[in-house]
Image 1 (cartoon, rainbow, N blue to C red):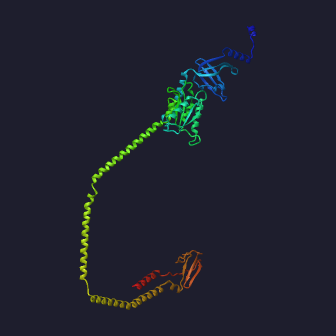
Image 2: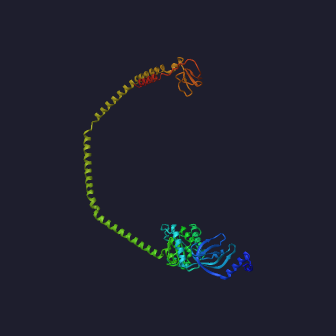
Image 3: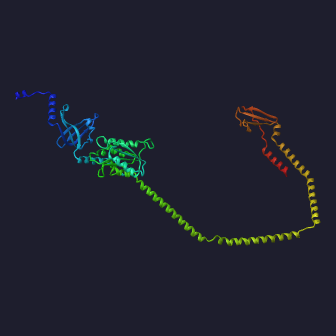
Length: 474
């Protein structure tokens, strides 16, 4: 036993790892492995690390950055795929792995299962709700189209628009298949929404996202979340026209309208111009006919009303006759009244002598009355003057000025108010003292007997003034 152990070749760890690496790579080369994706990791380096598994084993896999950017589908956990690549080892962790060059779904069933799972997720977020959908404009001025510029789709759309109703079309060229196409589609939709209305590049009134038919794998970019969420975020009404009538993608559920074909999307976007013109002409004819019928009905009604009213001569004739009769009666009455007035005037004529005597008697009476008035005028004036002088003397005798002449004085404060007692003014206050012959200023101090002041007898003066006024005008 010891001899056998001594004959075994001794390897270093690196030599053994490299020998295993060569054996695996030379023994298997390129292989195709079918399995379910387990862990999927995307570090900042851009490489993708994943696990392929079945019910009994797990195989590590790696997709280098350059290959990951060319994959048609993005690897996701739970997806059943077929990986094509080269088996190798990773000596650093003593494990074997597959370096994947291509990754495909394991049949349509796997993609459909992934599609249904994603559809349920987006529906739970409310992206498919009918109340979110916006109405399409009846006649848009500008139409934006997101599609490949080299395919037959854009030619079909432009041809259909030109036949129905020519409109201005803006095309945003983009990929519609393959890895990264979903990001380009999302960028195009958001780019159209960022345009300013009325700018150098006008903002479209409606968008069409279009692509021709293809397999489920070819149309998969329209099932990616990036494209679906860009459609849901669009403020511009959007028509989805991807594939043929039987093809369905997730953006069909999010779009405001779904067209079975790109040509049908053009038909949804604009009406038929000739049909509109025919409809306008038809409405114009109907309006003219309705207006004429309305005038005819009113003319007939007016004529019927005219017959019911009768002729103006029949209505005005009796009134004119009554007016003529009243005029004749008025003229006759005026003549009779003039005649009666003339007769009364003739009976009232007086003789010239009687009128002269009446005039002389009247002039004498006026002269006598004027002489009596002129004789009594001096007596009336003398009585009024005597009464006025008596009232004036009484008022002067009761005036406060006579009191001042007897040695009394009036004391007023700075505002002119009369001080009636010794305590009425504050100590040090400025006052004015009114004497019979003038005024003097003073400052109030302490002590001393209170000085009696005399106030003008207001009531007496008022009473005397009233009496004098009465005697003057009696």
